[in-house]
Length: 184
Image (cartoon, rainbow, N blue to C red; front, top):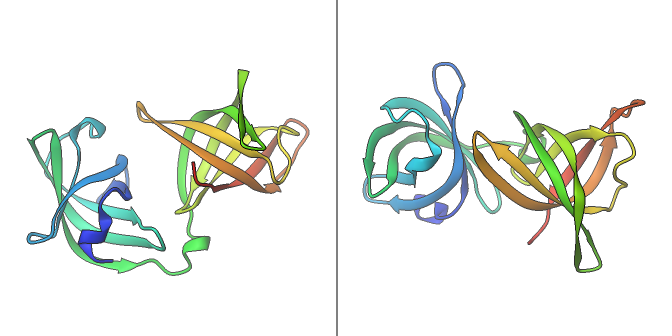
């Protein structure tokens, strides 16, 4: 992926040594002459210089880079210098574990959004370039349902609309639902 095409793409930074999540946000700026992306300083807890792996969720593909996150804050942004990178193979099959809580706050029905008085709790199992796998109470959804999901990502919120495309690992109390992102 050409660096100048990364503007506003979703990006996930992990510590290169231990794999710990550093940030999950969007790219807010790019310096193509230095091969640097900029992310909001608010989404990084520990602002220090460190080696990171960078996953960029492009429009058509998922890309992985090795880079260095500079801890210095300039104009409320942190710079990440990108190094060697590659397009990930079989994007549809690559899933990244993200254990976080969230809620289904609305059901979408025929272009109408029905806000739930009591949101449905969910646990996120993993996330990919175009979807998420959630676990919640059995029988909550059917294939084809459209939902609005609100996830808590280390104190930051991610709100997106999804379509339920798969049900799996159903038990008496809980069931997993594969969700594909849809346009807002």
